[in-house]
Image (cartoon, rainbow, N blue to C red; front, side, top):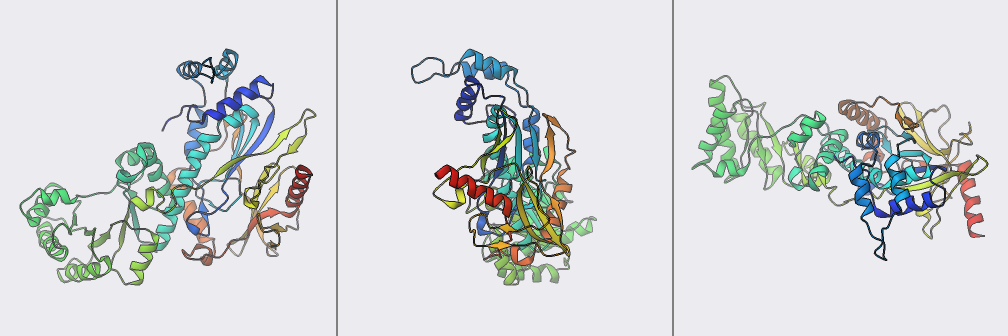
Amino acid sequence: MTTSPLLTDLYQLTMAAGYWKCGKAEQQAVFHLFFRKLPFSGGYAIAAGLGDVVTWLKNFRFSTAEIEYLATLPGRDGKPLFERGFLDYLAALEWTCDVDAIPEGTVVFPHEPLLRIKGPLIQAQLVETALLNMINFQTLIATKSARVCLAAQGEAVLEFGLRRAQGPDGAIMASRAAFIGGCSSTSNVLAGMTHGIPVRGTHAHSWVMSFDTELEAFECYANALPNNCVFLVDTYDTLEGVRHAVEVGRRLRERGHDLAGIRLDSGDLAWLSIEARRILDEGGFTNAFIVASNDLDENLIESLKHQGAKISVWGVGTQMVTGGSQPALGGVYKLGAIRNEHGAWEPKIKLSEQAVKVSNPGIQQVRRFILDGEFRGDAIYDEEHGCPEQVEIVHPTDVSRHMHPPEGSSHEDLLQPVFRAGTLVAALPGLPEIQSRCREQLAHLNATVKRLQHPHAYPAGVEKTLHEQKLQLIQKARS
């Protein structure tokens, strides 16, 4: 993963030059990173990407080579775009912001800040693009993974989308995020090394095709790797391939090994898996598992399970690592407050003709309410004013919809300190812990919110006091 601060859009740097030129570079500001719409027409999302954000921010520094490159950029008149004084400022710049974040693996909802950046305006502006790049993509893939794994109902899901992923960095991030969402392993060996994710894989059709017969191919593979025998059986005739796997499996047993399973990669997966299960069981391999692949996603897995498919391991590639029908999350990064010359925080708001695009002002925090082990609602509130004891949650885009957390609910605030004055203050968990958090979070979410089709809307919105402040700012801006 690149750690260069040039992982950004040019307009971040032109704005930064403007802040520097007009004396606003060190003015304190607060930005929030959030998304407006849940992906996949689903009922929830899974926060992910913070680990890579922390790595990038810890290394936030312009190198000599990067400064010299910026010095070569021309303006529209052919002269240098950036003044030398600004480039010298960037060369000496160090990361000094506060960062608060919702932990990876947490279920999250629209308009809730996944990250909050507080510090000098120029720094908070310069990091926007990279943070969106990492959080948007990994949150999307972790959410897709969670949906796929819920559809699999506890059965193992393997991620093997490396060859279809959006480039090398995208592949590594996708493997990481897919593991957070619940995948048990990856085919991506580099992701296994860099992130400690279990790796799995056997052979492709080319292995079988390189031999005169399928039986010979299985026998040679068993001789080479007797402790990794999952045979791909659909190169020629799928059910005949299963019979060949059984035949080789018997020879494996004679040598003290066993047939681990078979993989189906084409055809009617429901019918073929039922017939393959029968052949395996009759051959004495009742513990051999059946892996299915072939452009699977959560909806197809759910359908196959309803059809009684005898599949116990699910290999998901393209649809997992690309997001399938939804290629991007659509997260945004908006200014929420700025400190004026008197030292007071002034809330800021971005207006739009579309209600969903009107931003929330202030220094935001998210309070989650819990009763009887179930998440019951989230309220976005302004830390400057605090959260009242009697909370009323207003829907972020439909002001006619209000709700109160159930009486007796406990609560927790989701944004937690990560950096203070540029110093990392959080002990970030490892991927297995993050995956466990994701699993636990989903267990606290009502089943109606988790269903794939037409999920129930989880009650998440803006605390009433903040909502009223938002209305006042809208009226003031439009008056």
